[in-house]
Length: 380
Image (tube, rainbow, N blue to C red; front, side, top):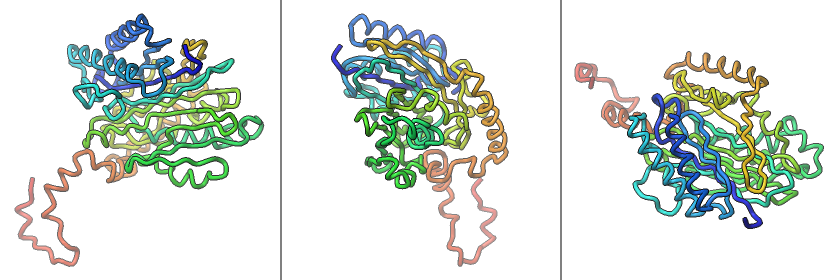
């Protein structure tokens, strides 16, 4: 293995069991078989097949760098193999995240979500892999801000000399496909102007200013923007390095003790609380939700993934789950009204354009006098 290690997390929804709620065990077995076969070819150092909701997550270590064709091809082949199993079992939405029929050298832009980072393994290398279901990449903005910029959450920003200088945030504009970087704490207010709008601006990566190393990275793929239609929510992943100049594990987990509201939930068209759960409770059921997040911890040793530790299975997050359920009760009571239903810009990828087109001729200038004789001609 070369000096630098690459940690790649690539995920896709290739078929739900039942509906959009979970992943059938046969898909996980097929994914494990595919990655284990690659181990024998020495393509990977190690791997872990995980899941949240109806998404299969491939956590892989290797020495080939980010955006490597062979690693991405392996993930694509794995998802294709899982899709075949999903079709045999008639699972819902089989292969829905695979937006192309053929691999083109990289899975970015082809449907699957990707979060990768390359680093020199430290004396102790703890990482946390967050996996979410029924939400979008902007769901990470709030916890990333809390972890890396809020001293009320992360004591290390005040008392750890290696963290006191703060962090640099790379923010992506998902609409115009541009990026911009901000340093905190100096540009904190400018940063918040953008990441407070998570439907468009997402934190892609975070870097330690003191160490000059990557601290976190996320998937920022938006399925509806790639496909031009609603094909399911993006269900993003986030990788965070911990300790020794990075936030402590407890500081990384702490933001999820207070569930924040995210876009997604039922039909990807509603706002709901992001509920932290253990893997065993990660299948969203109520109104296809509420949105879920799982946190898996690993110690990396010589590229090997020692773990995982299922962090949110801890009873310490019971109160967060209770709060999330209370928020879910309140929001569900709003039904089709905003802010439970997403704002109109996000609804552009649902039935709204069809309804608007069908009713276009019925919209008149406000000053125009209404002709009620047309009432009998109203389109059913």
